Amino acid sequence: MKVAVLGAGAIGAYVGAALHRAGADVHLVARGPHLAAMRQHGVQVLSPRGDFTARAHATDDPAEIGPVDFVLLGLKANSYAACGPLIEPLLHETTAVVAAQNGIPWWYFHAHGGPYDGQRIQSVDPDGAVSAVLAPERAVGCVVYAATELAGPGVVRHLEGTRFSIGEPDRSVSARCLALSEAMRAGGLKCPVEPELRNDIWLKLLGNISFNPISALSRATMRQMCLHGGTRKVIETMMTETLSVAEALGCEVGVSIERRLAGAERVGDHRTSTLQDLERGKPLELDVLLAAVVELAEITGVEVPTLRTVHAISDLLALRSAA
Image (cartoon, rainbow, N blue to C red; front, side):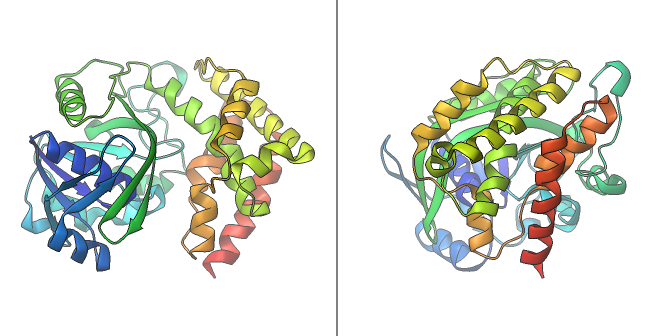
């Protein structure tokens, strides 16, 4: 199995290292000091489950790699439309693209069935720009339940979780999903093939859509948001509205809001990825979270006043932080 990780940051390098340990032919695409460190020392993984080093090939030029069986996208979703020149050398006729992203993916309504089948979501696939680069037929969905961070160039600290749920947009249990699942499990990761992966997307989104923008607006950690009465109420309302949209699209999350909040509180003083991006001056990945769900609410006729309000304010924050 030949795998390219396009955007081998904290999550991408972690998965790439695990697949390399399982015997896959892994190629990591990165840049800057992180790339230099991986070239010299490999990917060093620091984990409660045991430290290890993976000396996979690392480059900033995908043309060095050539066509692969799987491209794992470790890029932020807001950069997908511009990744055409990077991903094109990696594709052959049957290459699968595995997007380890938060939020609503560009392929969401591909092979969905029902009244929304094939519909494009403008906020995540503006004017079809992402689909033009990443054909939905290539997509294998991936929902990440792992927390990692870069402890330094070439060094990934694995904090918790090893589950990467994958699935086909058409709900089939495909040979390519089974092959990837087997390789991931051989590398020490949990990788169930989920026919109803959209349920997992909404479960993960339930936290991201509320905690991520609120953390950026308040500069607060998970624990601080959960313990502040007024903020907790806003988050509960955002989750309730999000569940209403999911249910209108036929998805079942299967976890109560109170249980989701209790889990978030246990995380402690963790800063969300959106808050970390804000502090580092990076673009904020909010379109696939808030904007997409507000758009889906319009499509399904669900009222989401709190989501709309938080989206309006956080959108201004994103614009100002990018200026």
